Length: 280
Image 1 (spheres, rainbow, N blue to C red):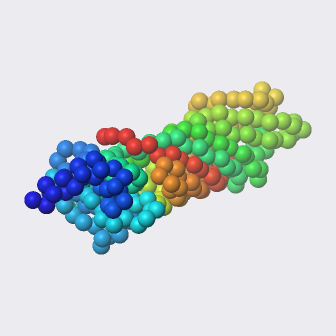
Image 2 (image 1 turned 90 degrees about the vertical axis):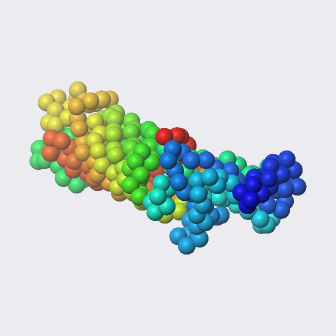
Image 3 (image 1 turned 60 degrees about the vertical axis):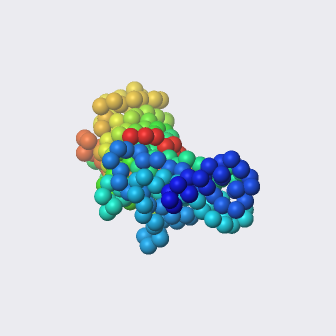
């Protein structure tokens, strides 16, 4: 009976439009996969002790007496057993319509990723032609990041970052002055932990941005190079904060080791990521 009443209220809200939105807000959601047995939801937060748990047959919620001028958000999670929960699907109130369909509660998220920062060489093999030791190397990356490829716990997921990387060396070794530009590609698996709008993560992988070792003629390497086989091993940690509904801003710290073993660097990157919901 209660479920029927909720559906009737929902239909009324969609039909009455602005009049309904003035006194309550209604949301609709759907499961992202087969076999989901439970949902849980709450308005404007993800507090552990404030969830309302319902069966998978309940897919609507009406929030009475919303605050005037507020844009309330509904958080919904899904579960197969009522114990392990997926990440939240989030929907904002839409003024004048009373509600919005939820994105799948454990959908894959993907988006663009832009970083800018610098590397600082902390170890260099003696006699390196380029003399990069102790120098700052500006760099930038542009690519994509994919979140929720694999859910480990309700707050921890496994994802992937793939990007194009650019680095610029300014050197004055053995009397040669000039600029050396490197363009490479990177693939970095990432484990991310969410706490509301904040996220922490660890990542590691490879980039093809290793400067060639002991060049016989440094003049050859002035200008631009794409060293496809020049592998750099990368490990790092970072954190982001969700701004609005679709943009993360953050900072990450990195350690890089060239596969030839003759140079180690540390670095820091400012980053911006966008979020677009997908489906599994």
